[in-house]
Image (tube, rainbow, N blue to C red; front, side):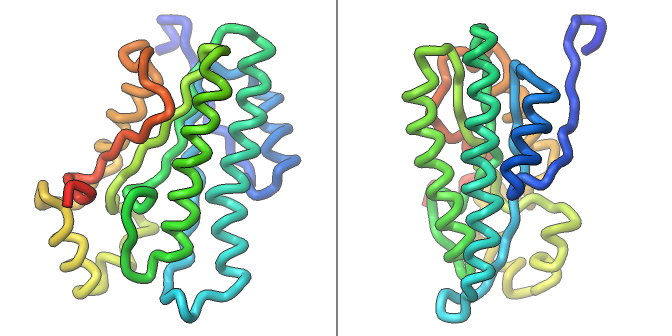
Length: 198
């Protein structure tokens, strides 16, 4: 990648801290491509959701994503060369799920943010898209897979009959970042194994 004159950097910051996010993005920028993979989940029944759970999930998944997108877009506009903003959303931005009310609400809102941002930023040649993975096996999801009932529910929904891998999301990210997706904006690339197909 460096031989082609390209470089990538992981920006580690608390996305819920708007000031810290703006500073990290401005220091690293202006960026050609921005992949926002920050997200949290506070799963549980609708009737048991606490205000703190709601606020925490909204603060990271929606508010944090909104202002990170804003900071990146400002730099891209100032530079005048366009770019690609990719946010890792979820299949739950298109459907619902048991004990996923708060999480699904944040992800549905994120899909709306993406569509509206694509309209505003299109004239600047800035593409804005989401990736919607299904359940991906990571240390964060191991507790879910350890529950036999939840694991069975997940497997019953994925038509490709396997759990997602991190590599499945990597391919979608490379596509949306590349010139191969030069005419793709305001959309969601679902990497869900057919979950949302019905």
